[in-house]
Length: 595
Image 1 (cartoon, one colour):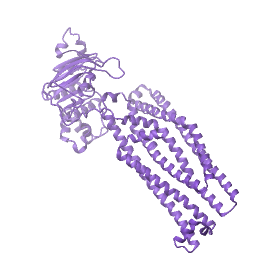
Image 2 (cartoon, one colour):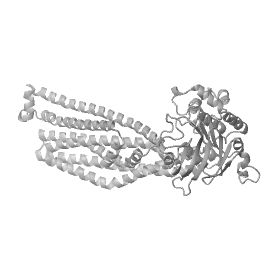
Image 3 (cartoon, helix red, strand yellow):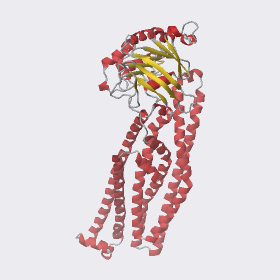
Image 4 (cartoon, rainbow, N blue to C red):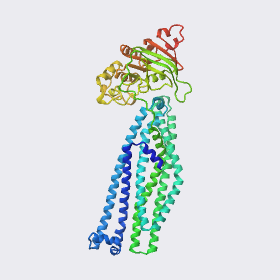
């Protein structure tokens, strides 16, 4: 139990740890108040059943005289009101503490979720590519809540229950050591046997939960992302089957865990009340049907009424912490300090005056045998339009990611104007670089917010948004075809737009920052010939102030480029103009003249 708690504390800052300790301290105080409320029942019952005990019991006699009572009935009323007041105060403070605990814990789920997303977004691109997106999605959406509620809140509640139980047992020991020791021994043995019985099944179910959850999210995401292809191919049954397997197993595991959680609590409850019945019969047989015996029995009954739910809660919360420990390990590993790459959007842009150069760079993806870039060297002069071509798997996208600073070379370096780029100052600092990927990630938001990607509404320059849209050849469509124009929404993933329109929104997004270097990775593939020609005219008109690098398979793009770089197997095999490389007899003629 201590190890999960130490792991949990490691992901909170000093302020949060202090608040957690204050909640634990309040739990201890509540435990004292609860035992005071339980203990106050005994003198009240004793006085009600035998008023003469007021004068024979030294403690009651001292209270009676010190408080100035002269009437036994009034003293009985006073003890009853005092006992009730203690119970009311204890319950009110318990409710208040429970509210503070829930408020703190649920706000921590928000805090941990946002911190985790920030960590993921700051991790090196090569490292985050190795993670399953479904797993990351599940961690952010479900596992954070599961960890905080299932370990932090369960831990605080567990401590509160342990303190209250310890105090109640202490009072019982003070009243009758032999009976209390016997009761505690029976309950302790029952718990120990149950713990030995279920600890391994619960741990196994907890370990399977993250794995099954990842599979379920991944299968659902596969089906929903590919719904068009699935419907066309009429293959929906297979995707339902793929989701059904892990979902059914998770349901069965939930049944097993629910049963394992239910049976022990019922056993503890039955055992506790059975012990109380035995204690009652023992006291009655030993002392007879006297007022003292009845008061003692009533006291034990009330103590059991307060104690049994606490024992059940202790068992449940220990089970919850153990069950959720695997998810806690995953999250703690993600919170562990790692080398963080620099923010690609730093304040200082690198001015480009002469050229960008990749010099003898080698890079391999984890798990791949062959390097994606093998001693790659190329030069991109400033103010030019350079087209990178090559067969599938040639390393074109890897070269682009190295240029952007997303991938760090294992060997070699990247130079800007002869100065080596470093992890602290990549090419993509500030707004110096605009990037258009092959597949545009569009938000379910307005056109304006999609073009001014990632900016707060108050920071958006709407005139710049319109200028970027004109340069991307999408302004007329937005103004004339979309309801509400730039304030209109485009649906999840841009479902209301064609492929070409999505690409132009992505291009407008890249142009919004007026970048010095514009990098397009197959970004014109979704455009028709006329729109592509108009777009290239607009981009080329911005030279020589803007350097353009485009990865493309399309002849129309290579024809407009100043230089064409041909990559194969992670190397630059040749470069030149389109006319030179596509001339009759050139080994690259077929590659460059492909439609």
